Amino acid sequence: MTTYLDLLRYRELFSNLWRRDLQAKYKGSVLGVAWTLVNPLVLLGIYLLVFSLLWKAIKVDHPALFLLSGLAVWIFFSTSIHVACRSMLDNANLIRKTRFPRQLIPLSVVATNLVSFGVMLVVLLVLNFALLPRVRATEWLAIPLSLALVGLAGGIALALASANVLFRDVEHLVGALLLPWFFLTPILWIPSMFHSHGDLLRLLHWANFVTPAVSAIRDPLFFGRMPRLADAVYLVVSALVSLTLGAWLFNRVDDQIAVEI
Image 1 (cartoon, rainbow, N blue to C red):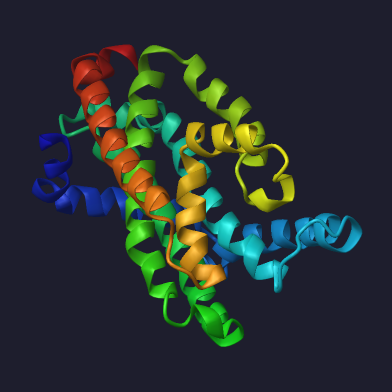
Image 2: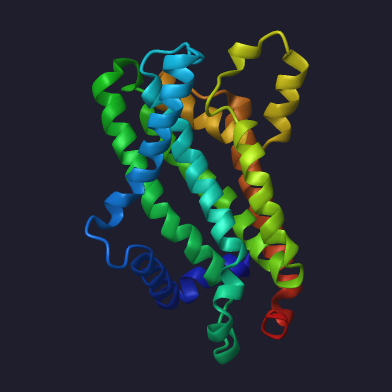
């Protein structure tokens, strides 16, 4: 796991990359990090209008909080892996000029998006504590589960960034898959809405590794119950597998990165 230990060895460089990405993301904006709430809130308004008011699809109290708890997870995960895909290519000049641990680049992308995810999570923790008394004993569990989600996103981001150096179609494939992937993840819907399709639901649940993450975090954060053990274990194991895969793939292409870009 030396691939990730370099985060500590080169923590000053990693911090500089993170600050550079964060400053670039909010350069010239007045609200700064507060803009991280605009995208999920706009999406929230659209989905509430379409699914809650028109179709009456979401049969839960406080549907806004239900949707936001899923959107926070999805936006962090999808944005992290999508932006990380091109991160090596976008930093080609830096990579050619200086020898440093290149894995810091896609991981700094994840760290940058972690700021917005942290803001959304804090907002949710406060709102849910105030409006949903049932979650007051469990919502804190969303924090360690979210750390596992960060590991999952970090490993996949590193793997995709490494693969995209050799195969430029990776970034386009990821971009094309994100939309159907979003609708196959229980963010706008809950499994009980499709109880008559049990086999299909089980397939979607376990084949889509983001689904257990959403379910495990949403259970204590919105429903006020302990996450299913299977979902929590799946999330932790998938994060470890993701980190291992990301490190393995990066080490396979590390020597070729400067040449290929």
